[in-house]
Image (cartoon, rainbow, N blue to C red; front, side, top):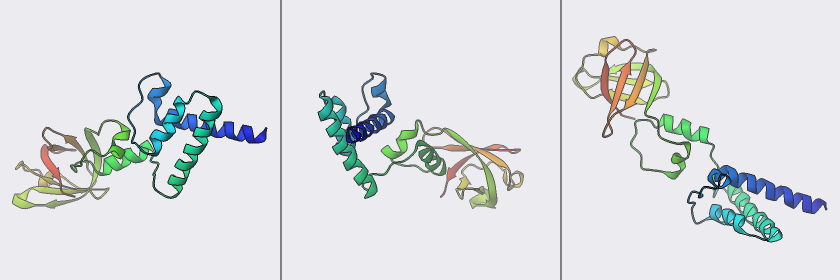
Length: 179
């Protein structure tokens, strides 16, 4: 009896995990495509109609998945971690990476505090954010004397990969992420 309860508990955890990974399945929508690896084998267990066979499938596949996580062949990432990574990568052109797509649409803008200000080519401003991101002005609007460390800047995504830096108490300029 205890062994059966343990197996039922494993199956419940597996089903709850699948509902977390595939929330569309819980609402009757078609489930998102998954890779042909471990996740799809776990997801396939849902379609096994005989209870004992479905439980055996979950036990086998979830066990294999846990082993893969332990051996670092599969990495589990929280959505908040993805959002934080996206924020630190804001302004850097990246290829579409499935791991970064899990937190919804990319941010269209972000607000940060300026850590330091410098002067770049042609008197254009360069500024470093508190997270270490370096940005440079790309147009010729004179703002160097108006931008100071400690001010807020809102960086906004423009068209065709361009960005705008909307400074607190200074005009908005075009900018690009340097590093």
